Image (tube, rainbow, N blue to C red):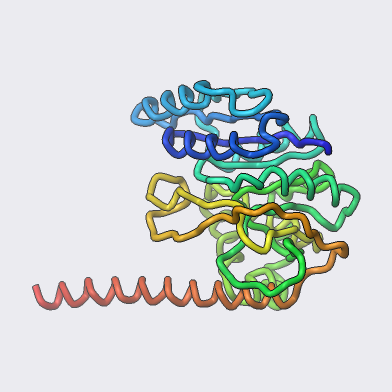
Length: 303
């Protein structure tokens, strides 16, 4: 089996980085993999200590067969670091597995990724392999399914797909003029992805994943997802650039994935279940915000 290169992106979280790399090293194919670790530079003097500690962590062990460490002198930001790193590795190797420093991996994560990258390499409509699945119950006959959207917690792609990355978000204009298409883009009204695009354009947010999703959406591409997640995000402790402090009970699946779908067709039933789940999450989040506003108002009235 052809073993794909891995790009690992880190910044200033040494303990997260250590845990994530430890979980990667415990994977079956780690000792046969090329690992590229991209260490972003500090934004300011306050970050220099943690950035230095991260670089000490990544140099502390031989995490994979070959480890290449790229230390940025200045801060590129999360989006630019990932976009440039993925582009660099993809152009050289034709495929890539992408990780960030707040992910714990199932011991079978690399096995799944490499199998899928090899199995679907000649299917142009399949544009990404995802390692994450939302915490939903899916009654399906295979260990993985196709869906028309991405998740960004541990993923893989090919150069044939990544070369289409819509860096300037040209697809935004298509959504802007088509209300029905915006509704579909927002997971049938389940999640405000279009608003994220608007924020990206107006405020230049440091994000890459919504642009990648836009790319796949406009091209009507598909992503393979495991039925149960193979990654756990440990970044919901307020330490990350985009993951704010919040409760997170995600877990990863400790079993090998062998039963892959043969036809590149999205699973409509699973998509509906996921969209309903996300609607409930958004409703709870809105209620939390409203409750906080109400509590502050009551405190002011009683003071």
